[in-house]
Length: 291
Ligand code: SAM
Image (cartoon, rainbow, N blue to C red; front, side, top):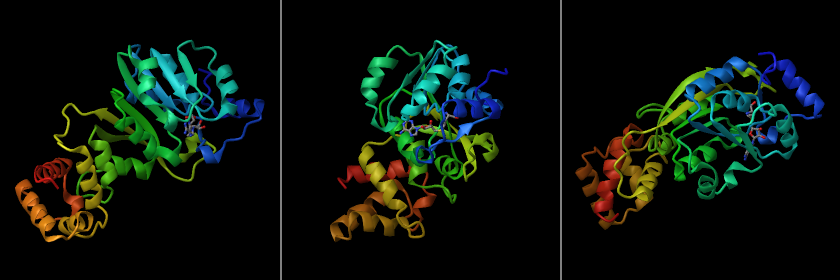
């Protein structure tokens, strides 16, 4: 389709027409390859039943490909310079709504009530601004928005951390924070050359899908405190890290060692070897002992 936004010539032309240059501070790297976009939309399994939430439509390259498949697309863009551009480039589509807001300041509950109550299926798709990848993802996951799937472009290293399994180098509290809610897998990697301007890092598409069964955790706050504590000094044992986090008071040590025993975990293991289920067991045992 010669009218696609995501070609080098059309993108250059749009930027020139509006006298725009990409703002590095807002993580603006525009995609200039329609095939990559089509693959992203396909990973999202987007259909007429789908309401898509996009973060950072830019000049509309991905938004356009989403609008062709989705029932509805709602896109949040922070940069006011792009609003008249989007108005123009996306004018052929009547199923797109652009909201001029910083995604990190959106009241998710109010947004749900005003826009999503009737949605059959909610899918988040974005070529993320890389300077706030993690805050954006955690904001969606920690909100109560019933998001079914997320397909997200990000820095390759971050993608491998989000999808990492226990006992690998990339595994950490971020892997757990994400996989507590979602199954995570890297769908494919993306070369720098499909962006204008080109970023300094390689990119990857990650796919997050809602877990069919929740991890059984009694006290979420304790669970996340515990997982973060276990990784503070990666090379130290679980026992060492937990003492640093929860204190060396003899009563506390007694309780902790009781909890670890009850959970059936060897305190000499490193935190990075524990699966999410093991962390859940441990935090539930701690919670029962009022730690
Ligand atoms: N979707 C376009 C594409 O794929 O070509 C542009 C992606 S670009 C990597 C990231 C976009 O996110 C930019 O349009 C940028 O202005 C926008 N953005 C940056 N910070 C944002 C924020 N806090 N809230 C909403 N959008 C933001």
